[in-house]
Length: 198
Image (tube, rainbow, N blue to C red; front, side, top):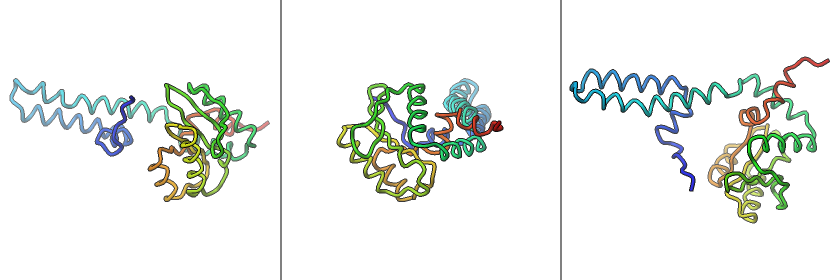
C-alpha cells in the first residue's frame, strides 16, 4: 500500500509553496534553538530543522524542473491545434516514456487504460479542446472507473474546468491534467510551438 501525504498537512503545503519558505522556517528553527536551548541540547533543536531543509530541497528541485508559464502556454496552443489521432499518438508515446503501460480503454467514458506499479488508471482525453468542462464528462469517467475497477482517473483538458467539476474530481479520485502537467509530460510540444516556422 502506497502512503499518501494528507493534502493539507504542513509538509504538503510547503511542497506546493516556494522553496525559500521552507529554508526560512529551517533557518528560524536553527536560530531559535541556538539562542534558547542549553548547550547540551542545541544539536537536538538544530535537527528539528532537517525535515524543513529536505522539503526545501524537494520543492526547489520540482520548481526548477517545472515548465515556465510561457512554455505552458505554448504547449496548450500546440495541443489545441492537434487532431484527435495525432494527440492520441503523442499522448500515448509520452505516457509510455513516463513509465506507464498504455492500452486503449474498452469502457465508454475513458480513452486509455494505464498501468504502473500495480495501479490501474483510466484516462479521458477526447474532449481536451472543450473550452469549459462541467461535471458530466467526469461522471462518465467515474462510471468507467467503477466498471473497470480502476484505482483512479485522469481527465485531460486545455480549457477551463468549472469549480463544481473540480470539486467532483477531488471527491472521486480523478486528477485533472491541464497546462502545467501536460507541458511537463510533453515538453517537445512547447518547443515545437516556440521554434520559428520555416
